Image (cartoon, rainbow, N blue to C red; front, side, top):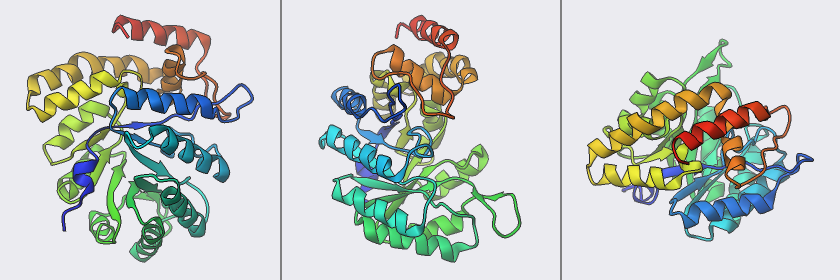
Length: 305
């Protein structure tokens, strides 16, 4: 049976930073306005994530509240993908999965919060979570600590194939942190699974596209949605010269200048500079300094943003 989400989740998927107030509480008003901005600009997919959304710094109730705000603000005009945190019991992940369905999310991004002790544990975890969700589930695929010998271990492709046979498990947020292995995952699975490639934005999609991927994690699109929408339209029209031009002349030079400041704090600073939210962070997350914000602003202005 064809995976219907392959047609539903296409183009840029914008990861949502959680806005904070000066007292480090979650700023739901700014979050709601930001999601509405993205939707009004034509962004087709928004997602809460373990990293960009600061879910390692929020408690369970805050995460549920953020997920709910995102879904409500999108108002059915964009596909919504919401996540669980990188901690907690299997029962907690199941509760987050149930909550994602209750609030009307389109998909649930499931993070496995333990070490790797073999496929049986992964199959049980994702099977129970997918059953509880009752909606499409994405695997947050990234290296796991190896409980059988130290170090880390990637999700084996053979294991991912087994997981994708579970009802409701429809794809993955691919974050292997190893470009060669990531490429192998995409080549093996893109025709049957939704694959959202993390890290690299449009340039990452240029690579994954030729293996069949249809979606990519946004970067510049967080504050300049039109550019990533224009890029994806060019790819769909097979106007590869235009798409490669956007990547090589705009995205790559921009990332080269911004990443040395730290992508996650810089993204929050950029959104603050453009009036979408305050620049506050929740400690111990680094907040961009005034000097960094000034340099980031100049970099953005040099691109007429």
